[in-house]
Amino acid sequence: MPKPLFTPENVNDYTDTLYSKSDTEVLAQADAVSTNFSTWLENNFDLSSEQSAYLATYPDKVNKFYGHLFAAGFLSHSPIFVGATPVNPAPRRAKETRANLFGDIKFDDTSQALTGSIEMKISFKLL
Image 1 (cartoon, helix red, strand yellow):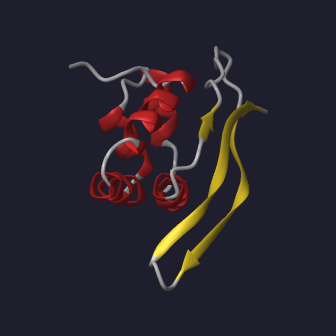
Image 2 (cartoon, helix red, strand yellow):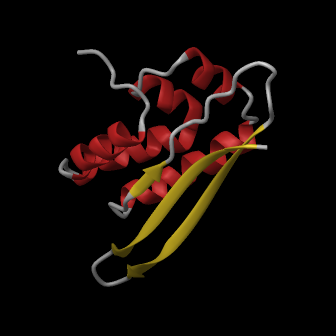
């Protein structure tokens, strides 16, 4: 089966499907995305050549940062809103990725469970 395009709608569909799976399967995806965000995106979505080129500019610490944000979102079954990637025609302009986080996560020592959620909004801006 072909991978879905990397669009806001397909990210939403992906998380809806993921959150209906077992905790073990969600944990496996959280582990995968936290290892390398760009690689996880390439493995799960059909990226345009511009999207792949853009992700290739992410240094390791950015891949880890976004990977851990997505992993936290997955583990708390949180909504993840990804804005559309802007068109970047020639002459090229610089891009900026922004993440806004809202939420409240608590760990219950007795039940060993996370409760609450994070709302993550990722947007891409042309500067």
